Length: 622
Image (cartoon, rainbow, N blue to C red):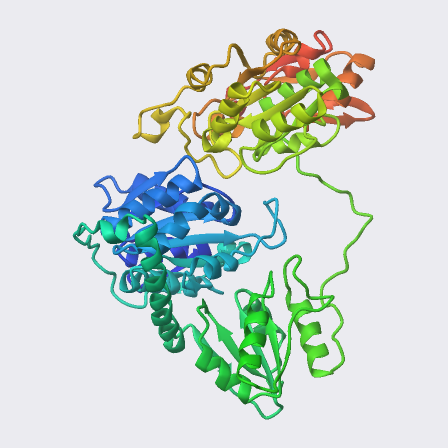
């Protein structure tokens, strides 16, 4: 089975990420590698669902790699071997994969490699808003930016065709809105049959020692000239509103094209040039458009790459066209909207700015901060750590669900640099400050990039207590597999890496492993490890509650209830802050619908909180 999305009428209603997967299937994809990260996760997850449903087997390979660098190298190696390959990741993951990405562009990949970068303007689920169109310019990658689900499908197919024609990696850049929109997608042509090209040995190309690399750099420039010719003729670059009688023009890219379409009136008299292939730029098309306009506005989320390039192009060709772009209201931060674009368009044309069409934000509405789930073992670990060390220690956090431990009363995150940094930045902080540092890292993040930091801490004799929060899955992005998971649930890839064995293999002498819900065991381990020096590790094991219920089919056996009101109950509520705690006529209570049955509260305040058996019919409810 190649592509399960399309019905007999060749249409489907798809997420942007699903449309990318559908496009890759119809392009003849052979290899998919990824590290999951929102907003890119559904791309690889869609391929995983297809593999799970296709009992007869599929003709593509899928790999959840340990990190983005590895995913990039897997895809590059497959493309070197002649197979159309996709490396999928979120924008900050592209940083991790930058090293192989730049070299892959130099040597070229005959099979065809598409690199998906899912950017996150507005920081919906990320630590920055970086605009990865910069990578297209730095690494010399043709770049396509879809604005609809249909374009996500079509551009993915086009990207693979371009990648194989140029023998160069091609970037498909999306954003959160494009990844998660849903729209009608139609199959534009018959799907291609997967074809793996025969590899031809050529060390003078594929082994980039300096003498080879210097020659390949020149060839890369020549390939980008060919890509520029493709951009000039690309159907994704088009003048959608040719009316130029006012002299006003707008050049838009990415999701800004959608906001512009909503903001423009039928009689606006504005010419619009939409750019779907945004690098290299179609300079001839742009020059013709600029020459026909007195004033041009560029619209692009993120950095002013397009604006600066167009200004440079106009200056180089001595054009007098006035060019505008970012301003104080529509800048580099956050996402655009129809209202913001309409207001910017009005300022550009000297018209009256429209009033906001959406309801004004209410500051008096109750806030709901992100929170750890009821029954999450991260909460009990944080409770025990705060109880043991309080504010006498500094807390180095990492990327995962457990980052939510920064909020009171847990307050177990004082600083965070990037994925896998808790051990390394924590070590540096401890060395510089002389203070006790406790680092936190999840199992997936440990495999991603935490192992090297711990190895460095052992080798350089840093004073660090590293707590590895092993919840048995890659929880934050949707329960994707990682090397430490119980692989029985996946049906394949039955090997499993043991975190304890790895930690001991790195030379850590002081190590404890406990159940993350066992308060007594946590207290004992922290009391033993806390006073010691050097690199020591506490492994707290307990499956993610959502994963245990949905995948492992482990339901609740009991729920907690408040057996005795008083200060002990109130203190537990204040310091543990489980979301299942509530008020009933002023008294502390436990919402049984939310309670996961972990019974941590009963361990903290025995006799105050007790267990009540759950009806078999409600055993899985929480």
